[in-house]
Length: 43
Image (tube, rainbow, N blue to C red; front, top):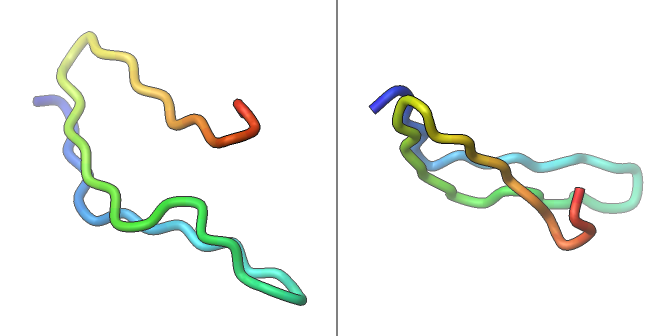
């Protein structure tokens, strides 16, 4: 295993509301693997 992430959260704070982009995500990536996190918009 090259890297391991546990219980990751990302919240964008705005004037009117907060937007949760990532909520309690865990993953492991092995050497040579390519991983992308893609949202509903495809970006």
